[in-house]
Image (cartoon, rainbow, N blue to C red; front, side):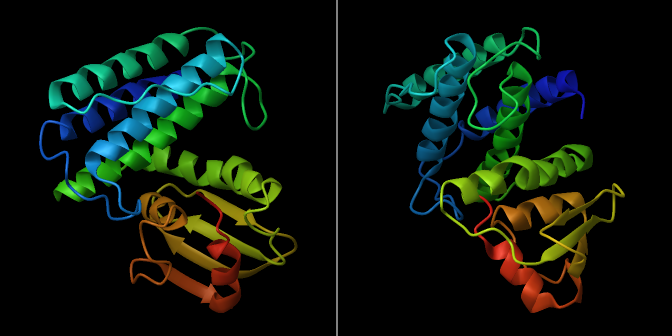
Length: 230
């Protein structure tokens, strides 16, 4: 996906997430441990500030200040974090930046922050019972990112082992496909791009009926269980 398109999507996802903060900040986030919507807002806003420093100061050791506890203060803090990130990412996408995975460019953060906001916007809306659709092309980009960036990082950090066999994922709405692991795929799972993305991020069970498995499903589940994300 084009880097400028990712920046546009990032702005839209942050706006959609921000709209959730006008409702119930104590709503539990189903797939994020014991977090509430307030905790999720602090996580997303703080990591946006962290990414802005990674771009502007080319370092990854920044620690964002705690978000205000009062509602209005939290909203102002989150808005500031969003504006700070978008301004930091507004320059040349090929410019150098600190990143935790290649490439070390501003464009890396456009993609990473956009996809982070996408998943957490879904989290927030899901908590409120209003989960909206995920853009198919953006969801496809998210699936690709899991395999080219997030999963390899999990392996490097020792959180999961390299896959011993391959599994193929087919997006039935975008026509995209991905193979993760060595050799010919021993299993294939098909579904819409958004369902595949939510599955990889643990928001949708891998055995959900909206997903269609072929081949050695048990082996495929073993590969994708990882954990590939986190």
